Image (tube, rainbow, N blue to C red; front, side, top):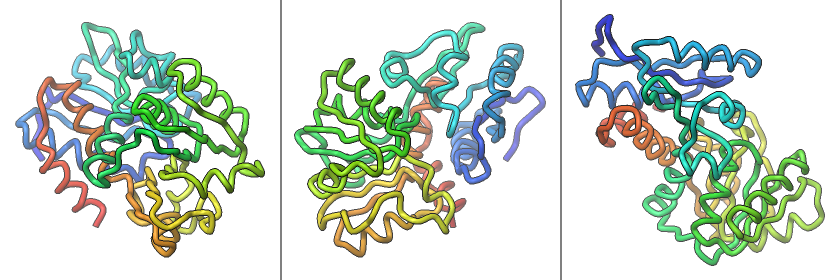
Length: 285
């Protein structure tokens, strides 16, 4: 990898960030495009996120940024303007420099939807879905599925208030049918059994020793179980789902597709998705 003292700097805000494959993917894209730039992880606590964002404004060589767990919602208040998608979701994963101002965007939803279509041949319209989690990634997935015409969205979260709030936003802003439940809600097992898609949008599974975020015996054969976690490639949820005859999909495709969209927003160029994919496969191996 070659870059000069005038290189554009791209950063990833998160806590933690050590597990992220975005640096490998985005640096491969920059190199393939011949862009003098470097993408680095920046671990920052939530209390320090406003200071970190403010530093971007004075950085003459700022190229762009990504935002990951747990900062996607907090970062909304730290940019100057939002894209329509980010405003609908209420969370951002991408920051773009525009004339001295910071634009907040969200490419998670479109990356997720493309992954569903191309990797699982799954069309959400008219099908019930269960989403585990109510954070920034869950918000993007919920809004995207609602706009894609799912029959019903069941949002399950440990803190039921967050699940209900997200469901209310989806109902109000998009007019879709959504309900928020707690993990111990007696209605939850039946709704998981009857769904066509289960999406894990929590961080449960990042540690290889983590158990599945829900009871895997609820998963029925043929349901698509999508874990947004991409490292490890096979989480406990996916492993148990596979044993029960479910179709399974990890988050590597979503990571690639949302990253390609972010790259295009930063540079105005379409990246080499093949170079990005090869870098991801090599890094995860």
